[in-house]
Image 1 (cartoon, rainbow, N blue to C red):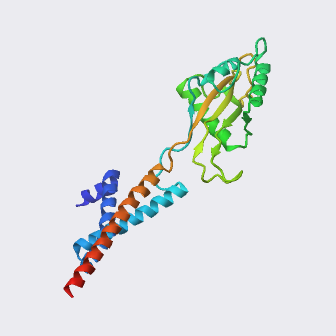
Image 2 (cartoon, rainbow, N blue to C red):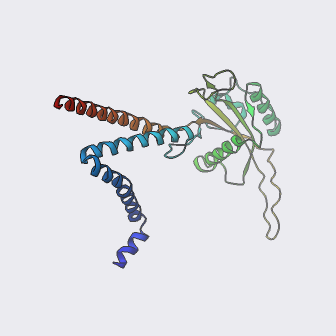
Amino acid sequence: MLSVLLSVGWEPEIRGWTTVIISVVVLMGSTYLLLGTNVGARLGFLIAITALSGWMMSMGIIWAIYGIGLTGPAPTWKPSEPVTIVRDGALLDRTEVVDAPIDIAGLDATKAAAVVSKTLVDEGWRILEESDPSRGQAVASADEIIQIEAEEFAAGEYVAVSVYDKGGERYPKIGESIDFLAFRHDPRYSIVEIAPLLEQRVEPGRAPARAQIDTTKPHRYVVMIRDLGAKRQPAFLIGLGSGIIFFLLCWLLHRREALLRKNLALKA
């Protein structure tokens, strides 16, 4: 007996299944037991299932509104197609996010990066401030692409200089600022400008030197597109499915009540 109790308390799978079974039996079973002893087994079951589906519909609506509960994939940045990492700013037009090639022939890395930045701003790209949370999200996604997927650099070998953002407009809107009914959107792009760092010599017992940008190497540009995910989709489907079942069961209860009244009237 002691070994059985220890296994239930230690194994996560057994404890999880036991918790679910006890919850179903205690909560749903007790409600059905009370209804069954008062109105009968069949009618009590119908009322209990109707109440459960109504509660699930309410929870699904609340989850969908606030984005809580059972959620789907969260919004994130994905590598853009057909080109994600641009190793020369003059080739940014091949990513299909700028209109024309950028002329930086004969310029050093610093001046070339300045020309590319000015061209992007002139074409409608917005430079994100360091305090902008969107900047941190874009840099984190670019780090994953650079370090893990492309293996272009290792951690500490580069620094994110600038982050450019464009697109993502939502519509339709009410006026200029009310957009809670906006269910359509334009594609949103982000470009993270990467600058290689000079290799630092590490000496035991001394603090590492301040990182310095290598001005002899061109800047890289990581082009990403925003994936809005489907955070509220599971909650919406639960609310919709439970609502259909709820209204169907309510119709069955109404139909049963109407038939009962008709039969009682005939009997009288």
